[in-house]
Image (cartoon, rainbow, N blue to C red; front, top):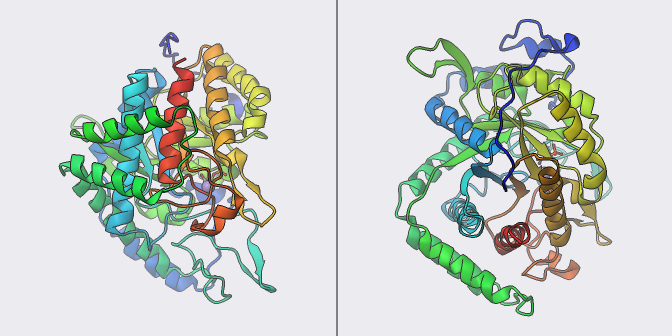
Length: 458
Ligand code: PEP
Ligand code: MN
């Protein structure tokens, strides 16, 4: 972790990325993907009007503080962890679920503090991570063709034709559940969290009777997490985020705000601190990148194994023309088996253009597969392999490893295989409760972060 910390100068825009004037709705003139189709457009308009008048969820100052913090991750002074559900659900907006996720994120941060001696910036995929892009707009369940599930703020998860029709009312519900979740997080941040943390950890360890005691690091791992739980006296901020997918919704919560006394007003998405553009919507000449380039929040862009580095550079130039370190996080989701081949050319393209990006690895999305019993799964070992491999290649190429992005649950779910819980195919029937992609369980997540820290500090 001794890569030289440098910041490059602003870049000159490439000719074909020099954008026309931005407006809150200029994205409407670009091609757009992955938006729900509502049959009742009048109801949609009235819902969006209501949302437009709703108060902001987060504070502008906190959004700006997060950008400063992410900048430090880009310089190697801190490390980012960006964790949470693939699809957050309304039913998990309850005291226990929020508390478990909150404790998990804090424990991950403390493990990194302890082993790597680094301060950590925490962002949750939480308080609004409701809308999902899907590979197919329709699916067949028990012989009945219906719309796919697009997330709790669009339609219902339960597979009925009627429930799967996009319902504008759900957007309002999503706003309110996001507010409730964020208030609960704020309360937890003001609490004496030490006791909560110890209790949650004890419950999780008690529930897990079949931990892999033969694994050589077992005792050290348990000691480390218990010590971390005892350490949890001073809680630092947890920032919130979601994929900025539904542009009608996001635009209504995007407001002109003054963020320091001597600055003019600028547009902020006031529903969350951080937003990312998904892998399916990251094209430089399409609607999502157009919307994102006009907001002041720190943003992320997902990069897959098939993304052309030249196109990614165009998106980066469009999104961060001032080349500010901390504004743009590249969230790599390459798949463990593709890292060696696809990461070096991307690094080369980015460094040739002297672009300041924060390199973060999403080590889950490229490692998903469907097993023989039709469960969508990921294996702990493959996720760890991707984390370490991205770390190593960035390091070799004099780039800073900025952080880790994972889909995790605060509960004892059985959705990913392997790790300290020895979860195997048969265990998936016990508690496979995700509504979209498989999440690492509470203890699998702690174990993964622990193993990553041990591997890279060797
Ligand atoms: C996600 O983060 O849940 C997601 C859909 O990822 P990606 O855009 O990388 O496929
Ligand atoms: Mn996902």
